[in-house]
Length: 598
Image 1 (cartoon, rainbow, N blue to C red):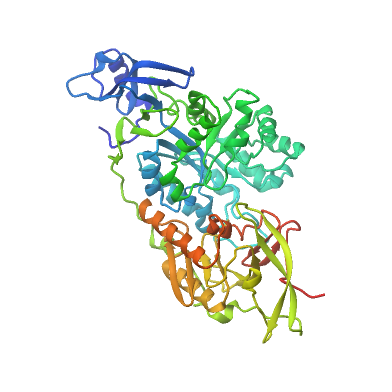
Image 2 (image 1 turned 135 degrees about the horizontal axis):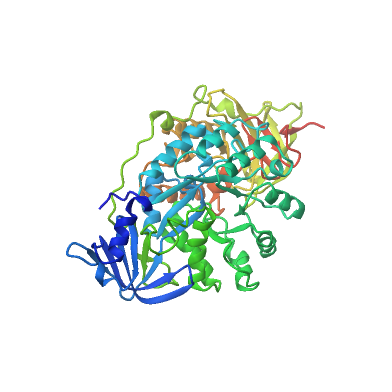
């Protein structure tokens, strides 16, 4: 068989017809299953699926297609479902390379993803996007890319590693396998007609591709302006009312269930209670951490959640297959089981559990009863991508000391207050002691030092501030995953441990770290752009568990604290953030001093 290459239908259509007529034998026939027909919403018992050249030739009673060399898989007692499609996700969130992620996703029944690699784009621009896209092209998992639209997230408040312009987007639309524009987060820019956003949307529409959105507001006029501008989907819906409003305006609703955002319970009520048509509803993951992949699954977990909330299993599967394929105009190839389509099938024992026992992509059995059978080519990123942490010089404890401009023994400062399980932060103030001219953190009051260090161009730029809400009692933590510009973020109770954490992370090539009293407690090295590990899922899951334990040892009791920490630098979500340029008041969209001199 072909090594899991996707053959074009028109190149193999003659052969498919010959198999359907019984004149040529199939390569593979799956027999005696109950077909999940996503076109009609039916479950059809005692169905066979005959496959040739990686595509489906016949659906029904296919005995006449079985020859001497045909492989036969008995699906008696199992359902035959189309492979699941994740319409919006960031591979970088899994902390895995595209290859390692694909192994985990295929085992859970995901056969195609639409990834938005905007994290790597903020570090390496078009080159980073191209590398992840290329890595995805060689895999048994179908990897489509939506080209990142908002890099950097702001132009005036921070320094990213790269910028993407309208010309980059227009060029990206010509790549094979680019399916649309990545989530358009800058909705004010769209609504107010900024040339960059307007130009990117126009280039995408001219290429006949999907413009995916990100609209968290309740403002109806802005929503309609956003849709009128050309944005056709949104995954940022958290209430049933928002979901209804978007669906009524012809928007495609992506209902998200990731590791941090659990939106199915509330938003699925548009189906279970409002009983709207489901053609324009998709299920997506957005962000899934390694542990979730292992313990709950990938898109199969989202489909299962919809079923648990009362959605009919076939309808839930439609929302994770054919609806997504149609949205991206790829339903000629993927999303359903019918003659001519790619043979991406799942064999599932129980539709309510959504755990596939066998997975077939392009007519090849790639996963069977707990074992991955597919060959995964090795993909090595260039050295430049693996050396992405550029500091002007090694850091010292002195770099983390903030001098007071007041002459007194105490001073008033602005604080960033973290909120558990939320991407938002609160702006607060506190009075801190000044000793030897240096403003002192106060771990007893849960106030620790924060630093953001420019790590892309070696400028030596460091900004210092204070954070509250992380409950650190000792030690320091650091991360090069710092949305969206991914500078080096450090937080700690003392300057010595902060310097150690920063220097050690730079030496590793990025990732996440926790240190205490001059000792490294745990690291998750992420050598690919400082965002992803090159290690297998099991290794990364173990390292992340050790990191979580280390955060607890330092006093932090928050759920997934490193995710909350990694968002402390995102200057597009209210109310207050740190960037490499300083403290950002997001509501005012400007830099403010840390110290309040009255």
